[in-house]
Amino acid sequence: MKTVLVSSNPGKAREFQQLFQQHGLELEVEPLRTVEIQADSLEEIAVFSCLQAYNILKKPVIVEDAGLFVEALNGFPGPYSAYVYRTIGVDGLLRLIAGRPRDARFESVIAFYGPQHGMRIFRGECRGRIADEPRGSSGFGFDPIFIPEGRDETFAEMGSSEKNVVSHRGRAVSKLIAWLQEPR
Image (tube, rainbow, N blue to C red):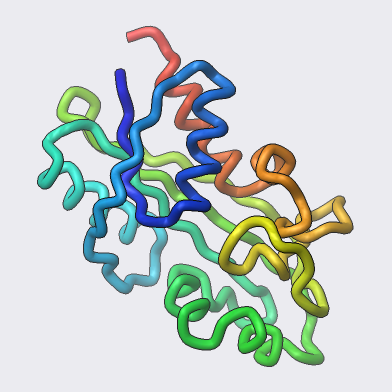
């Protein structure tokens, strides 16, 4: 089954494509912009966008939504991460947590929809901490300030192959790929 990732984020598309290629699977990327609802749940956002994309493209699609959840901010920005990144950015988030504990986690929710299989959800999580200052030039979004548990470098200091092994998105995509490869 050929899978279509709906995303206008080139960094996200690159990470997905690399993981699919490692497993010998084809992935088409459709840079369709869907309405991204504001909701308190990554799953709600991903499912809404996935169904919207399917209704436009009329073929099986996947949509991923991810968020950075900072413990000292009661999980904020969470599902509002893209908006927070666009409005106050990395430096603004660092100012919000100045002097506070830096524990955080990234979460990823992938929604897959196809008429033969219905809606399927795949989740991934990566725990870690927020760096004192941005480091690295790879990745996108909050990657320059997120250090995964057991590591010393930020996501932005890792190559995409290395990041895919430990990241929230890599873990969720691996679950999706395992499901896609199951005999039907």
